[in-house]
Length: 135
Image 1 (spheres, rainbow, N blue to C red):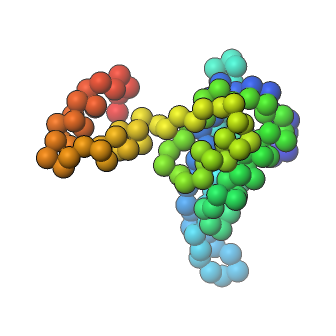
Image 2 (tube, helix red, strand yellow):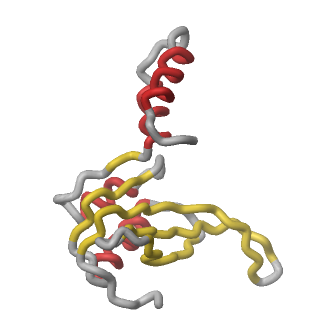
């Protein structure tokens, strides 16, 4: 399953990572589990892969994207990423024609950095109303 060939094109791919606690050799340690969830051309969700690492690093993220390419993914229309450092750069390195899209939550957070503290609450409320996706 981990080495299966993948489709050549995915309209949307959501690369992400989560930290899990893992017991190994009698000790509990944090490990990062990377995943790539793709939406295929039929509109169906497909888990493209899972990878485990001891730390979250840009070099490892680049290896994840390179593996997807080596398994047959030639194009990703919209890679939707959260605030993880290194994923946009890894995607742009492996798929230079692809434009990275931040998820809505991170777009709002990023936008609010440029708003004065006094106006932040009002602007956040306006951005929330303009977002058609329910929370």
